Length: 252
Image 1 (cartoon, rainbow, N blue to C red):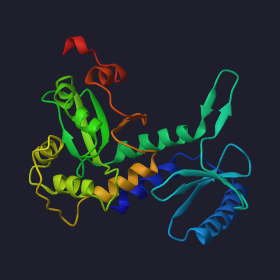
Image 2 (cartoon, one colour):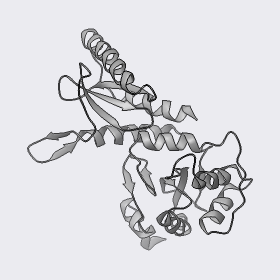
Image 3 (cartoon, rainbow, N blue to C red):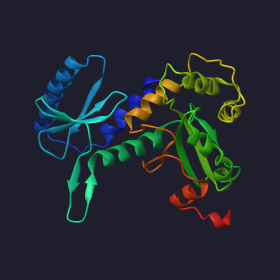
């Protein structure tokens, strides 16, 4: 379970550029101060300094299972929000840029063993990683599009994200689907309202998926992560996804 989040942190570290010994020491000193001050206020949370942001003296700090913060080097102030770079032609969301790279690296390495995967009958032309919830109406609506997505060559990989939390009825349902002998059919049955029995296994990955989603910017469902790291919140039709994925719908 924890390995999913640790992978997110390790991928963020891979995205950092090489630094000199002096710069490394400065980051280590700031990290110690920042983590100590944040933990003193919220000892129940984990904090990881990812490195200095493009603004000197401001550090990017990942909350374990939570948002990315921008914190001053002395740990006296932080911003929970997006930081933009102003270029001659556009505003660049630096927080989202980091998250895109983080997601890209995570999903390039993440095994499908703990996902529920709906594969095309033929060649896979594209992949969608979908954080889903049993009791989310638009998640159910998106699931109805899966056969059409498969027919177009899109592989749909589900991860669990019970929006009401890990103590909710939605958690019990989605964990049951992951623990079933036939997870694909059980998930479909739950989404169609045809299954109500609850049976949870101890090693289900739902908590890990939930934490991973929170660490990479997922705040609701359905939330689709493409293999290039792009996060697409909300429902879209199969045709809309095909266009976004660059697939030729007419040839299917």
